[in-house]
Length: 133
Image (tube, rainbow, N blue to C red; front, side, top):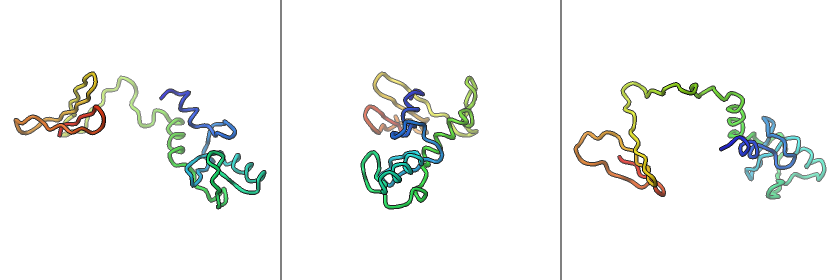
Protein backbone atom coordinates (compact mmCIF):
# COMPACT_ATOMS: atom_id res chain seq x y z
CA UNK A 1 0.00 0.00 0.00
CA UNK A 2 1.50 3.34 -0.96
CA UNK A 3 1.82 6.23 1.49
CA UNK A 4 -0.90 8.31 -0.21
CA UNK A 5 -3.47 5.52 0.14
CA UNK A 6 -2.51 4.95 3.77
CA UNK A 7 -2.81 8.66 4.57
CA UNK A 8 -6.21 8.74 2.85
CA UNK A 9 -7.42 5.85 5.03
CA UNK A 10 -6.15 7.54 8.18
CA UNK A 11 -8.07 10.78 7.75
CA UNK A 12 -11.29 11.79 9.44
CA UNK A 13 -14.01 11.82 6.79
CA UNK A 14 -15.62 14.87 8.44
CA UNK A 15 -12.72 17.34 8.67
CA UNK A 16 -10.22 15.48 6.44
CA UNK A 17 -7.47 15.87 9.07
CA UNK A 18 -5.30 12.93 10.09
CA UNK A 19 -6.90 10.79 12.80
CA UNK A 20 -4.95 10.82 16.05
CA UNK A 21 -4.88 9.17 19.45
CA UNK A 22 -7.95 11.13 20.59
CA UNK A 23 -10.07 9.60 17.78
CA UNK A 24 -13.05 7.49 18.82
CA UNK A 25 -14.58 4.40 17.24
CA UNK A 26 -18.38 4.27 17.18
CA UNK A 27 -20.44 1.11 17.79
CA UNK A 28 -20.89 0.88 13.99
CA UNK A 29 -17.06 0.66 13.73
CA UNK A 30 -16.59 4.02 11.96
CA UNK A 31 -13.83 6.20 13.45
CA UNK A 32 -13.75 10.00 13.70
CA UNK A 33 -11.84 12.80 15.43
CA UNK A 34 -13.07 13.44 18.95
CA UNK A 35 -13.33 17.15 18.03
CA UNK A 36 -15.63 16.40 15.06
CA UNK A 37 -17.85 14.19 17.22
CA UNK A 38 -18.10 16.98 19.82
CA UNK A 39 -18.96 19.53 17.11
CA UNK A 40 -21.70 17.27 15.71
CA UNK A 41 -23.18 16.68 19.17
CA UNK A 42 -23.16 20.39 20.02
CA UNK A 43 -24.81 21.33 16.71
CA UNK A 44 -27.55 18.65 16.76
CA UNK A 45 -27.93 17.83 20.48
CA UNK A 46 -27.52 14.16 19.53
CA UNK A 47 -24.76 12.13 17.97
CA UNK A 48 -25.32 10.10 14.82
CA UNK A 49 -22.55 8.44 12.86
CA UNK A 50 -21.63 10.78 9.99
CA UNK A 51 -21.21 7.74 7.70
CA UNK A 52 -24.19 5.48 8.40
CA UNK A 53 -26.41 7.74 10.59
CA UNK A 54 -26.78 5.22 13.45
CA UNK A 55 -27.71 6.95 16.72
CA UNK A 56 -24.93 6.83 19.33
CA UNK A 57 -26.46 6.48 22.77
CA UNK A 58 -23.42 6.95 24.99
CA UNK A 59 -21.16 9.88 25.77
CA UNK A 60 -18.28 10.65 23.43
CA UNK A 61 -15.70 10.11 26.16
CA UNK A 62 -17.24 6.69 26.86
CA UNK A 63 -16.48 5.58 23.28
CA UNK A 64 -13.35 3.44 22.91
CA UNK A 65 -10.28 4.33 20.92
CA UNK A 66 -9.64 2.41 17.71
CA UNK A 67 -6.91 -0.03 18.79
CA UNK A 68 -5.88 -0.86 15.22
CA UNK A 69 -5.58 2.85 14.43
CA UNK A 70 -3.40 3.33 17.52
CA UNK A 71 -1.09 0.51 16.41
CA UNK A 72 -0.82 1.92 12.88
CA UNK A 73 -0.07 5.42 14.15
CA UNK A 74 2.55 4.04 16.55
CA UNK A 75 4.11 2.04 13.73
CA UNK A 76 4.26 5.11 11.52
CA UNK A 77 5.89 7.08 14.34
CA UNK A 78 8.54 4.35 14.87
CA UNK A 79 8.92 2.77 11.41
CA UNK A 80 12.15 0.87 12.20
CA UNK A 81 11.09 -0.49 15.59
CA UNK A 82 10.46 -4.08 14.42
CA UNK A 83 12.08 -4.01 10.98
CA UNK A 84 15.75 -4.87 10.51
CA UNK A 85 17.77 -2.45 8.36
CA UNK A 86 17.63 -3.12 4.63
CA UNK A 87 20.20 -5.67 3.54
CA UNK A 88 20.23 -7.42 6.92
CA UNK A 89 19.84 -11.17 6.32
CA UNK A 90 17.04 -12.81 8.26
CA UNK A 91 17.94 -16.05 9.99
CA UNK A 92 15.33 -18.51 11.29
CA UNK A 93 15.65 -19.55 14.95
CA UNK A 94 18.12 -22.38 15.54
CA UNK A 95 16.64 -25.82 14.94
CA UNK A 96 13.74 -24.49 12.86
CA UNK A 97 14.04 -25.37 9.17
CA UNK A 98 13.35 -22.53 6.80
CA UNK A 99 10.38 -23.33 4.49
CA UNK A 100 11.19 -23.66 0.81
CA UNK A 101 8.96 -21.67 -1.50
CA UNK A 102 8.47 -22.42 -5.18
CA UNK A 103 6.93 -19.59 -7.15
CA UNK A 104 5.02 -20.22 -10.35
CA UNK A 105 3.20 -17.86 -12.65
CA UNK A 106 -0.28 -18.53 -11.22
CA UNK A 107 0.30 -20.85 -8.29
CA UNK A 108 2.20 -20.50 -5.04
CA UNK A 109 3.37 -23.78 -3.56
CA UNK A 110 5.20 -23.91 -0.25
CA UNK A 111 6.88 -27.19 0.68
CA UNK A 112 8.69 -28.31 3.79
CA UNK A 113 11.04 -31.24 3.99
CA UNK A 114 9.25 -34.55 4.39
CA UNK A 115 10.58 -37.47 6.46
CA UNK A 116 9.05 -40.02 4.07
CA UNK A 117 9.67 -40.62 0.40
CA UNK A 118 6.04 -39.85 -0.47
CA UNK A 119 5.33 -36.61 -2.29
CA UNK A 120 3.76 -33.96 -0.06
CA UNK A 121 -0.01 -33.53 -0.07
CA UNK A 122 -1.33 -30.27 -1.49
CA UNK A 123 -4.27 -28.39 -0.05
CA UNK A 124 -6.06 -25.53 -1.82
CA UNK A 125 -6.19 -22.65 0.69
CA UNK A 126 -7.67 -19.97 -1.53
CA UNK A 127 -7.83 -19.26 -5.21
CA UNK A 128 -4.53 -20.22 -6.85
CA UNK A 129 -2.76 -20.94 -3.53
CA UNK A 130 -1.56 -24.39 -2.50
CA UNK A 131 0.31 -25.45 0.62
CA UNK A 132 2.04 -28.80 1.12
CA UNK A 133 1.73 -30.54 4.42
